[in-house]
Figure: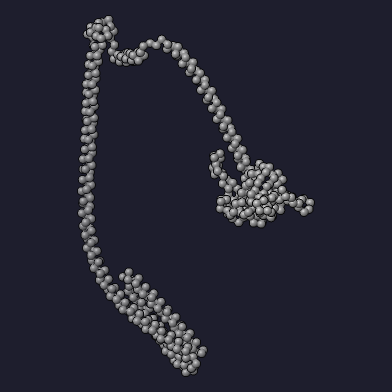
Length: 463
């Protein structure tokens, strides 16, 4: 049995070495594929592959020798241990597998040798091709020198042509400038000629109109007026200004129409009405200004009062929240801190163990406690004489009901609470309890219970 274990161990080692050989061959194949990319290094790689192949053959021979030794040991173990026939069969199967692996390794080694010969052939081909390429490179170098000389000559000719072209362009630009100046002068002369012709036609028309006006208004021909030396002549700008003033005054006189004899009285009445309306307007403007100042003052006062109430209620809310939840954090914030008059209010709460979040994301009990904290904060800022709570403790557990009842007991000093509840723990803090019962079908009765402060049994009364 011990000999068989040793044989199995040796076979395992042999299989491990065979796997190592396989990995080595795989690496050799990978190296061989990479060597195809560089023709200059293939010769050295082929030699390295040959050495590795020779080493593999030596290892395979050693493995074969070791297999023969294992076969001899197996025969001896078979004669000495007939009871281990099943284990020997397994070992034999492993041996056959190892032999097959050895045959595959030999085949792979043979393929590697063939690949080495193929690589050597490719190396010789690459060397011949390299020689041919070197000859072609020499021819290309000569051709490049010839082309470089031609290029230098062409560049010199191009520089000369470019210089001549620049001179021609400069001359063309000068001619264009002269042509543009001549066209501008010609256009100016044409415009001046047109203006003079228009002015001449206007003067002729004015002279004809003046001749007609002299006949119509004075009854004297224009030639006689021009011949009269006693009438002063008006020329140039003075003529233009007098003509313009005459036309304006004549136009105003025509627009006035007949004289209104009641115009002065109407003016006085209108002036009195204007003064009255102006006084009324000033009074209205003063009233509007006073009203706006009052509104501004009221807004400022309301803003101050609101901010004061908001800060106080926020403090009370935070304190009451921590008291009801036994820790945590809660506060109120304005949605628009700049315009507080139209701003909304967000309530942010964080019970112990939770991150800050909107109150709408809390559970039912947490919402109830948060709302109660806010209500208490408002009551503490401006107490109310009465407060009715309708089953606010319904979503609360026993621990939270205890905190709730403790808070109600503290606030009952200044506020009377009427609580509608089904919780016995909440009922226990009330000095008076009222219940509705129906002892007979369709007949309701109210039962009141008043708890004494001296420990006596409560007394019941029906109404």
